Length: 105
Image (cartoon, rainbow, N blue to C red; front, side):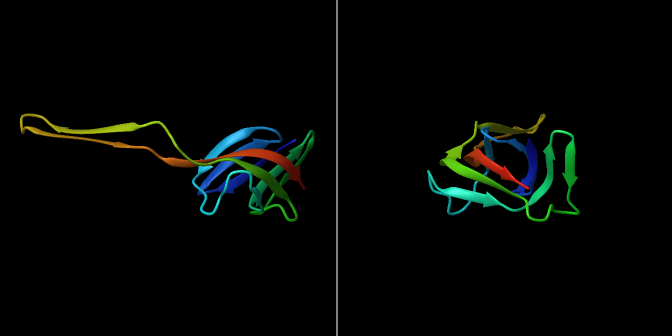
Protein backbone atom coordinates (compact mmCIF):
# COMPACT_ATOMS: atom_id res chain seq x y z
CA UNK A 1 0.00 0.00 0.00
CA UNK A 2 1.26 3.45 -0.88
CA UNK A 3 -0.02 7.01 -1.04
CA UNK A 4 0.93 10.33 -2.61
CA UNK A 5 0.85 13.30 -0.22
CA UNK A 6 1.44 17.02 -0.67
CA UNK A 7 3.71 18.90 1.72
CA UNK A 8 5.65 22.11 1.25
CA UNK A 9 4.53 22.59 -2.34
CA UNK A 10 5.89 19.18 -3.36
CA UNK A 11 4.38 15.72 -3.78
CA UNK A 12 5.83 12.61 -2.14
CA UNK A 13 5.11 8.92 -2.73
CA UNK A 14 5.11 7.25 0.70
CA UNK A 15 4.84 3.71 2.03
CA UNK A 16 4.36 2.50 5.56
CA UNK A 17 7.66 2.16 7.44
CA UNK A 18 9.75 4.32 5.12
CA UNK A 19 11.65 7.46 6.14
CA UNK A 20 11.61 10.57 3.97
CA UNK A 21 12.77 14.18 4.07
CA UNK A 22 10.25 16.95 3.48
CA UNK A 23 10.56 20.73 3.52
CA UNK A 24 11.03 22.04 7.07
CA UNK A 25 7.76 21.93 9.01
CA UNK A 26 7.18 24.62 11.62
CA UNK A 27 6.34 23.32 15.08
CA UNK A 28 7.70 19.82 14.43
CA UNK A 29 9.39 18.27 17.47
CA UNK A 30 11.29 15.02 17.59
CA UNK A 31 9.03 12.11 18.55
CA UNK A 32 5.86 14.07 17.74
CA UNK A 33 3.16 12.51 15.54
CA UNK A 34 1.88 14.40 12.49
CA UNK A 35 -1.15 13.75 10.27
CA UNK A 36 -1.23 14.64 6.58
CA UNK A 37 -4.74 15.07 5.19
CA UNK A 38 -3.57 16.35 1.79
CA UNK A 39 -3.63 12.86 0.26
CA UNK A 40 -3.77 12.93 -3.54
CA UNK A 41 -3.74 9.18 -4.25
CA UNK A 42 -4.08 5.92 -2.33
CA UNK A 43 -3.19 2.56 -3.87
CA UNK A 44 -3.78 -0.81 -2.21
CA UNK A 45 -2.80 -3.56 -4.62
CA UNK A 46 -5.16 -3.35 -7.59
CA UNK A 47 -7.41 -0.73 -5.93
CA UNK A 48 -6.26 2.78 -6.82
CA UNK A 49 -8.17 5.81 -5.53
CA UNK A 50 -7.34 9.15 -7.14
CA UNK A 51 -8.63 12.33 -5.50
CA UNK A 52 -10.16 15.30 -7.23
CA UNK A 53 -8.03 17.00 -5.92
CA UNK A 54 -7.90 15.15 -2.55
CA UNK A 55 -9.05 11.70 -1.43
CA UNK A 56 -11.87 12.17 1.10
CA UNK A 57 -11.29 10.60 4.50
CA UNK A 58 -7.72 9.57 3.73
CA UNK A 59 -4.84 10.47 5.99
CA UNK A 60 -1.20 9.57 6.47
CA UNK A 61 0.29 9.46 9.95
CA UNK A 62 4.01 10.09 10.43
CA UNK A 63 6.42 10.35 13.34
CA UNK A 64 9.10 13.07 13.36
CA UNK A 65 12.54 11.43 13.34
CA UNK A 66 14.62 14.58 12.91
CA UNK A 67 12.94 17.93 13.54
CA UNK A 68 15.45 20.27 11.94
CA UNK A 69 18.25 19.05 9.71
CA UNK A 70 20.20 20.64 6.90
CA UNK A 71 20.81 19.16 3.48
CA UNK A 72 24.08 19.03 1.61
CA UNK A 73 25.68 22.30 0.65
CA UNK A 74 24.95 23.63 -2.81
CA UNK A 75 27.70 25.81 -4.24
CA UNK A 76 26.68 28.80 -6.33
CA UNK A 77 29.37 30.45 -8.45
CA UNK A 78 28.75 33.51 -10.62
CA UNK A 79 31.35 34.50 -13.18
CA UNK A 80 31.67 37.05 -15.98
CA UNK A 81 34.54 36.50 -18.34
CA UNK A 82 37.11 39.26 -18.83
CA UNK A 83 35.45 41.48 -16.18
CA UNK A 84 37.10 40.30 -12.97
CA UNK A 85 33.67 39.43 -11.55
CA UNK A 86 33.44 36.33 -9.36
CA UNK A 87 30.94 35.59 -6.60
CA UNK A 88 30.86 32.42 -4.56
CA UNK A 89 28.02 31.53 -2.16
CA UNK A 90 26.43 28.40 -0.76
CA UNK A 91 23.06 27.15 0.42
CA UNK A 92 21.85 24.37 2.74
CA UNK A 93 18.14 23.61 2.60
CA UNK A 94 16.50 22.85 5.97
CA UNK A 95 14.37 19.69 6.17
CA UNK A 96 12.30 17.56 8.53
CA UNK A 97 12.79 13.77 8.49
CA UNK A 98 9.61 11.71 8.92
CA UNK A 99 8.89 8.01 9.39
CA UNK A 100 5.53 6.94 7.94
CA UNK A 101 3.61 4.89 10.52
CA UNK A 102 0.14 4.48 8.99
CA UNK A 103 -1.83 5.03 5.79
CA UNK A 104 -5.60 4.98 6.13
CA UNK A 105 -8.13 5.52 3.36
